[in-house]
Amino acid sequence: AQSVAQPEDQVNVAEGNPLTVKCTYSVSGNPYLFWYVQYPNRGLQFLLKYITGDNLVKGSYGFEAEFNKSQTSFHLKKPSALVSDSALYFCAVRDGGSTLGRLYFGRGTQLTVWP
Amino acid sequence: SAVISQKPSRDICQRGTSLTIQCQVDSQVTMMFWYRQQPGQSLTLIATANQGSEATYESGFVIDKFPISRPNLTFSTLTVSNMSPEDSSIYLCSIFGQYMNTEAFFGQGTRLTVV
Image (tube, rainbow over all chains, first blue to last red; front, side, top):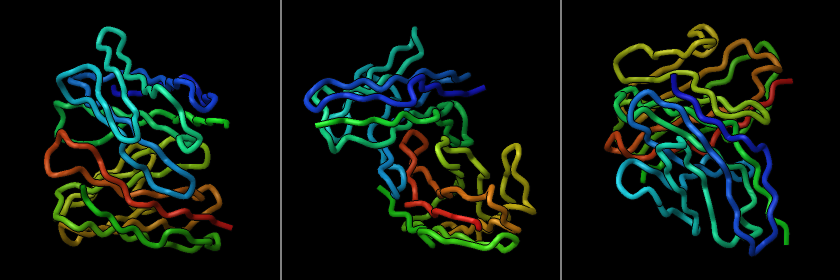
């Protein structure tokens, strides 16, 4: 069965500090991994993905994530947080070998960056 | 990236009534997905809608409560029937890009409040 765990409901960081939002996953086939961000009263916006290739992937707004197969993790990172990064972040996984196409989401992590 | 138009963006409805949510995509897609995001919760897949066939519902969701139409490759509707306050959620439609290894795109969501 596919599943995603985001162990932290909330992450608080000061502006300018590095941030990490954690994600671990379980999938029966090849993992396709994604990070999405949700601002209040908005839909989900795509940040970045890992399909294959380099374990470190770079995405929108200066975010990056590192795929670690042995630890089944895909943590989201940013070297220097901005107040505008404050939002709800979701990690998601797909089974790359499946044609069904459905995503499995973590429960979300609320990121708050204070000035 | 795809453009997904979802209507209405929000609504307040009386219990016992029904609401139909529309999702229009600017390109032809085989599969469309409907998700529910209950307050403070993650996204849960309701059903997968394929054009020309009945929707496939996830465990815990039934056609009588959430009938779905998929009349063509660019449009789908989700109806929330006989609503109760427990149906108050954000409902989102989603598609994948042209290739299965692309990210999912989401509509802006419909914020439903049942009173």
